[in-house]
Amino acid sequence: MIIPIFTTFFFLTQFFQLGSTTHTNTCRSFCGNLTIDYPFALQSGCGHPGFRDLLFCMNDVLMFHIVSGSYRVLDIDYAYNSLTLHDPHMSTCDAIVLGSKGNGFAVEPWRVPYMNPTPDNVFMLIGCSAQSPLFQGFPAKHLPCRNVSGMGCEQYYGCPAWDSVGGHTHKPPGSAFGSDPPQCCALSFDSIKAINLTKLQCGGYSSAYSLAPLRVDGPNDWSYGIRVKYSVQGNEEFCRACEATGGTCGYGTDGIRQLCMCGSTNSTSNCDTVKSSSRRIYSAVDTLSGFLMCLLAWMATN
Image (cartoon, rainbow, N blue to C red):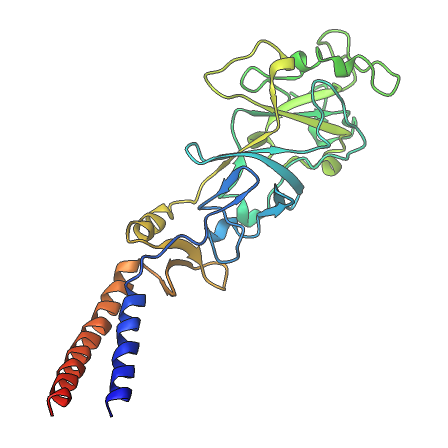
């Protein structure tokens, strides 16, 4: 009789101890030297649902995948809610890449509220056809081409890459376009909403961004890449409440509903609700444990 009672007491004690262990963040991870944290994640169910199936770690290289293609992630700045991306087929000051090989940049419609290139990121479209949507009505109508944060094609034409492309000089004489559209058209992402080289009938593109208040003298010193601003669209309160109670932010199997992961239990609010429920269970366990100890003491004296 004593052995089964002792076994039951031991099991209940262990159950109580397991329930009181501190929950650790199993979603935070690393890829190479980059930390992956909320709202991003590499594991399914972790992070914010608006950023699901976005990042992949391949041989310690973090890749960012959207409808327009895959990009290497150079940096994630959690303080300023931004990522820096690299497209290997993007032109720089040293090389012009034509043949419509570049990804450009476009996100799925449902992702648009969550991420877009920053306002100070300039896209310079290169070698676009005269029939491109960019030039409809040219030269009578105003071109969408313009400088962004002090960066544009007039400066970009000064790069060594323009001296000769495919054996032909592509650098135009001065800023006058004449009757032909320019070889390079600079614009902000917000003015066009998607950089699709095929639809825009462009041979290539370059992208550069400015890190205010830093201002550089010329295109040789520009930061080439795509700077993306991200936002969780007002859902930060849920995650803050979750983390404040010791939980980890995630989402359900539907890929939409946010969840607060509290150890082996999930909550649709925060871990305090789970703890409150657990305390009621542990109170019952304490009562039963006390009864069993009294019973053991009584049996030992009889």
